[in-house]
Length: 404
Image (cartoon, rainbow, N blue to C red; front, top):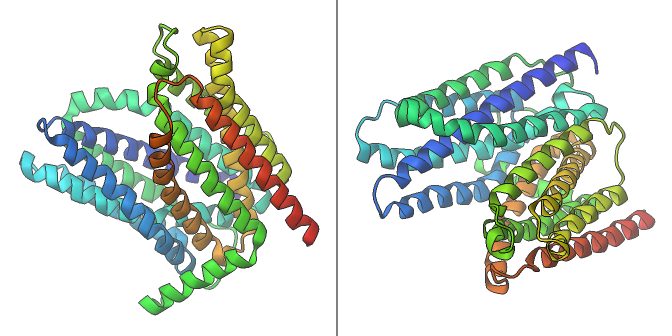
């Protein structure tokens, strides 16, 4: 990696880390504040979370179009700056009633800004380093994300108690502004093309349609997006079951749910570090092998429990699944970033994020109906389903390769 690429990578990782710290703190303090308002506050928390998901599902597609039409660096700086200003403004709202509704509205606006920033952020990677360094950059980003997930929730408890909702919101705002300043220091090494100031509803729709056509013409890309949808469908079931880990494995006295979350995060961190040491591009067959291995570790949880109901044996399942899901996510995402033309990358990423968001509630709904929370074989079902999914798509991808 050249000096300018290393410098750009350091700035991008620093900006991403600071921004994610702000996001995590923002969600924690807001959820805590809304939950403490009154006994009916669950409705407020539900609205807060639902609006965020709906806006993300609807506007990620348009965010991809904007990322391809305008300069991605400017988009990221502007969205971070506006997010910072909104959080700082919130910190000066003193009335609890006004603050309650202002937080819900502000979160919706921040979700909208995020829908435009996320495709630009992920497509921007291709402009700041050479193609063969993208996987390494993604591994650094994933490592920082995992560390934030592990450390910041614990710190958020103390921060919220120490400086309260207003101080935490002010800190959020400063973190977003800091992130914008760091992005401004990045110097892209690849010249952007097709960036204009033209903008209209017709142009947005035309660009969106051309993005779908691009995906439809590239069958391998189409299959990878369909695979991503399938994986997210079953991951929704996995996430749904995790809080019921104590009921599924009642013979284990320890808190299985908390242990699984910690072990999964540790596995994700290990996977991100390992990924940074895999410099070569993985084939689609190797990606499917990673997914199969993930499924094996998920399916192994009830088997470990039957062999011996010990938390030390059971914890191998979330550690292993965390490692291989992280490896799969980083390398499949890097493959898409490398292979998709830069002019279409924002739209393709927007399509992927939208599909992922749409399929997760479908999975949650179906598995809520099909599965019993106290069945110790639940993870076996999810794991086997993921293995079957990987094998089916492996055959599809092989057939596509032979047809070319």
